[in-house]
Amino acid sequence: QVQLEESGGGMVPAGGSLRLSCAASGRTVSSYTMGWFRQAPGKEREFVAAITWGRIGYADSVKGRFTISRDNAKNTVHLQMNNLKPEDTGVYYCAADDAYYSGSYSNPISYDYWGQGTQVTVSS
Image 1: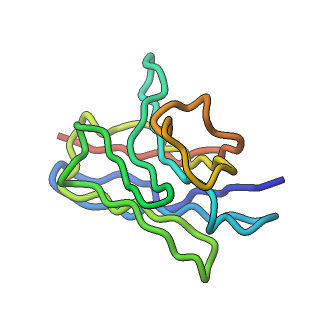
Image 2 (image 1 turned 45 degrees about the vertical axis):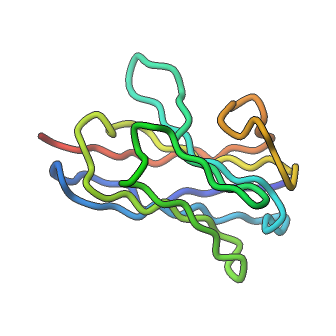
């Protein structure tokens, strides 16, 4: 089993930055596909970013503003979010897929483990 814990959420004004972290425990996730998803009130959970073998993917809405990265030494994945917009508001979830490579990393069904989420609020 893998446990995931997100941190780093908060409230920022539009144009601000936040860095989310996802700390994994139970197993080493350096060979896992790791993803970030978000869910706004009244909306479905949507893909934000993922890192898998040899590839990093982003939702079009966050390209150029968000960066996903791994810190294998700390068994952690980060999501650096810059130039935040009010439409980025939501609960951000970290997810892990035990597949080393995933061609469907943008589909939440592909993931085996989920964190509890961290709230991000961007004010206009």
